[in-house]
Image (cartoon, rainbow, N blue to C red; front, side, top):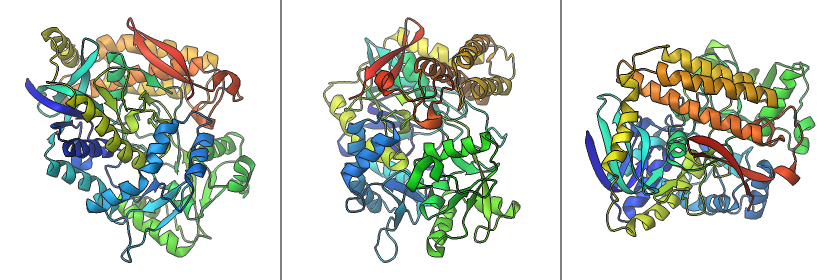
Amino acid sequence: MHEITTDILVIGGGLAGCQAAVRARQLGCEVAVMEKSYIHHSGAACMGLKDMVVYLPGINTKQSEMALQKRATHGLNDETMCELILDGGAALVDRLESWGIQVRNDEGELVYDQSMFGGCNLYIWNGKYLKKGHARQVKKSGAHVFNRVMMTDLLVEDGAVVGAVGFHTRSGEAMVFHAKATILASGDCVRMYQAPAGENFNRWRNPYHTGDGYAAALRAGARLKHMEFVQGTLVPKDFTAPGINAFIGVGAKLYNARGERFMGEYAGERMEKSPRQLLAYAVFSEIKEGRGPIFMDFRDLDRARFDLVMRGFENEKPTYFTYFKERHIDLKSGMMELEVSEPYSRGELTGGVDVDSTFGLTLPGLFGVGDATAYGSWSAASGAMILGWEGAARACAYAQGLHAAPRPSTATVAAALDRLEGPGRRPPGMELAEIERNLQRIMTSYAGYERNETSLRVGLERIRKLQRLAETEVGARDVRERVKAHEILNMLEVAETIILAAKERKESRMFLNHRRTDYPERDDKRWLKHLLVQKQAGRVVVSERAVG
């Protein structure tokens, strides 16, 4: 067993975690970063980014952006977090430039297109370097990075979080981190639903994000928020990949099988320049009602802007070019078929840990940033970076108010290590892949884009049955299987919270994010409120909190 003592423990080395680590070091704190993968290629932006949604004064007004965020979330946005993100955009651009990230062209100009989220898509000219650039800054800052360490539990003593435990995913060595403050930056939960292309790791988001932070926070006693909301997006047929936002930003159009440009029926004058969840809902509805397949038309695009998008794919998703070639898609003269991705829980305006205006969670000593948190905005990468930076300042203030890192009791550490080692002590039963497939079938069938009371009741029964089965059947013969086992156990816990919250919210809101076929209308009078889930006496319970 390896023990580490630090001021700030950052769990997750994605964009939010890296920003938090650098900021905490600037503020004089000792920092340890626990990264499940390898920090140079980890997180949702592990492959790089071609652009980022950011608000810059003079492009749109702050008031219009705040109003747009409120409309898009149907009133459930967190205005404090949204304002922090809007106010932090210009400073983020300056910070990235100082880190060697090129956000201006050779003429020194910022180049952007209108985003379907509001604000603008600001081009990143060396976006494939984005994650490596962040990793270099973390190393330069003097933070200690522990790569390939999977967090399995937070350590809680006397009601406060005092660190975490995990294990090295190659050697299997257990690691215990003692910290004055812990920042949860562990990302979203991706693999709970069946992938439309039929390949488990062909996902729009990073498939190695399995809700580890959500589940650990829940077990520790923290609250999760908005778990009933999941999100999907538009992706190329049989190839789940990001990029549609960029095409729409430069003027791509959507057509159904009848040759109709249908977005006017759903979005009015905004047409395709609509929020992600509305675009996904429109395509889902057209296909369901027999007007599929759906195609994206590139033929009238401005060539210069189109070339910028294609250059961007070299930074973020170079495998797009292989897909285009193998599907014989000529984007300059043809169209590309689209589908809706699988649902996923990704923080932002879907489910995640519940943070207050200080980035604190229910438990003292625990803070949350990035996609691990339900911060009620759609700003994705820029939101993660800005909130990582801001959240670290709050965590440091807390840590610097403590004389020394609180130590968990021997019993607390022993219990966490016992759970960590659990899968390795059990004889392997059902194959881990089969348990995961069962989880995905249940969630897709009963808690997917369309839900009702009966489907959710049956889904909950089956998830809980699978949980009980997993307690005896999830065994691990080696370290690789131990990783997989803990991922499955975490996803099962997250799945239960999604179904319980979806059962509670008896309305439909944010289009496919939460669509109850038995309660198809939005009901602000009863349901303009946040739903929270928390473990109490070993049971997951749902509560409400007013907006504002």
